[in-house]
Amino acid sequence: MSDNTYAKPMLKEGSLDGKVILITGGGTGLGKAMGRYFAELGADLVIASRKLDVLEKTAGELENSTGKKVLPVQCDITNFSDVENLQHVSIEKFGKVDSVVNNAAGNFISPTERLSHRAFDIIVNIVLKGSYYTTLAFGKHWIANKQKASLLNIVTTYSWTGSGYVVPSAVAKAGVLSLTRSLAVEWAKYGIRSNAIAPGLFPTKGAWERLLPGELKDKFKPEKKVPLQRSGEHQELANLAAYLVSDFSSFINGEVVTIDGGEWLKGAGQFNMLEAVPAEMWDSIEQAIRNVKGS
Ligand code: HXC
Ligand code: NAP
Image (cartoon, rainbow, N blue to C red; front, side, top):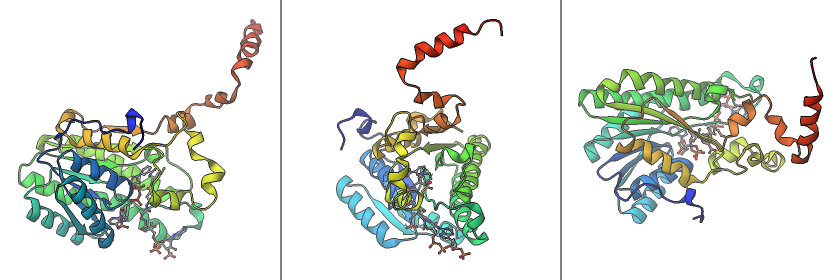
């Protein structure tokens, strides 16, 4: 673990005691990092995705390191009967689920005109359909059982800006953001909160191999696009996620929290290219502007 404060666990011990949290895509990458921290804070977990062997390995690791229960469930979230089964086995095992983290996703870079309609479908089905399937299955259960709960959706900063070369992912994540905000209002009366996190660069095998394959990572040096000049640490994201599923954030509803070191705003601000101007040039630039009188 890094010595930096931002990469250290943030919440006090026991902050998630008694909670049961489901994380889709919880066997790998950011889902695994969030799950580890939730369990360290006292939560039992359900982790769900397509690859049971990966889930079982992660579940074993997390159970050993935290002493909490971790239920691995094979589930393709694009298939509603899998999702219904996920909901049934989770309740059977733990009696309740307090939070659903919609984290599972699929993505790859491609010029849009090279995509077949099936390539488009596969991404939208995982990201958008998968997220509303789990939301619907668990939401119906919570409402029928009058259980307070929370949804946490992992989106991206291009959910609102859009982005070329990842168009299926961008349209699907935009839908998930809309789902987050829509249900924040509609389901608040049932005590169900709905929030999102938009991470920037958080190196994971799953994302990096599909979005920056081969030499692209060295060619583009993605950290250079980030005003804070670094990528995020998994614990930083886990800290934020733990807060948003905890009762400490009980009044936060309908929010999307960006954690990207300022990356998307750098691309948005019209004059942000002036970052490239060396400090010593600013005296002469200022003089040139002041010399423009009355024009
Ligand atoms: C064009 C492609 C393609 C590519 C697949 N297809 N790869 N088209 N370019 N690189 C097409 C196929 O030809 C096929 O269409 C259709 O997509 C489905 O292909 P499959 O073979 O069924 O899919 P497969 O390639 O096995 O799997 C794709 C996937 C897989 C499901 C997306 O990569 C996956 O399981 N991903 C899960 C993990 C993941 O993606 N993690 C990253 C999340 S990162 P045809 O017409 O030929 O049948 C993320 C970060 C966002 O979201 C922001 C970061 C900053
Ligand atoms: P990852 O490790 O590839 O995670 C994706 C997970 O989704 C995998 O565990 C995968 O497991 C699961 N999944 C894919 N299709 C599924 C399906 N049909 N049913 C069930 N599970 C499925 O990538 P990651 O980087 O940790 O990404 C996690 C989340 O963060 C995603 O929502 C991503 O968009 C978001 N994000 C990441 C970054 C970043 O920099 N890493 C930036 C912005 C947003 P199986 O293969 O076993 O199904």
